[in-house]
Image (cartoon, rainbow, N blue to C red):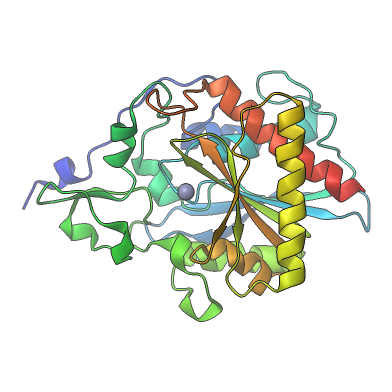
Length: 310
Ligand SMILES: [Zn+2]
């Protein structure tokens, strides 16, 4: 057996810009000063970390947008984007000073910035400027034999891992594969779904990232046809708006039968969507900067807000 400190060694702390909060000291700093929002402790992760949710109230009877970041620890841009949205709602500007007129304070927002804090805690802050291979060392993790864990095997046993991957909580649960109410086992999915079902958002956008250009995904498990049509309409609008703005975007909309994001509909009645952001790795078609990555996350949120206002 490898020594415990070696197994649980801290990830490299890549220096990231101020507008890319990726560590718990920054999360706490931003959330503890967000007086315009209600911040709640909605649950505790398998590893004993607090899961926080943020509520922003617009006008009464206004539609509600749900945002969920940090499902996967090796995809730090989602949490960062959520905190930038919280900044816009309080101060009219994101964390680098850009205003987003589309992200209006009329509507309600229900936000879980870091849904899987265990994974965030053990993953690097960013993969911008690195290689695709660097992500592969972290996403599904490395077994004590030194091989990449096969994520299609589902949950992993943390004791058998040299690097416990960003897909998992500290108990080795692959939380984004709990895609039916009966399959929810992890405290993370349980807490997020309970919070969302309490607030009944109209749309929930879950942030993910990959080594490719921006992409919209429809979670489709047990999603009725009329909701799938609504998902497609929203995705098309985002893609068209991005094309108009000359933002590189994958024109295809993928379907996922496996994603737990379908629970936002099954349990909460929302229209669920997934946005896959570029990771910013150099050997991909979108070797983007931190700035481009956050701007495009914000752009997608802004498009959804505009749609909800109409
Ligand atoms: Zn992901």
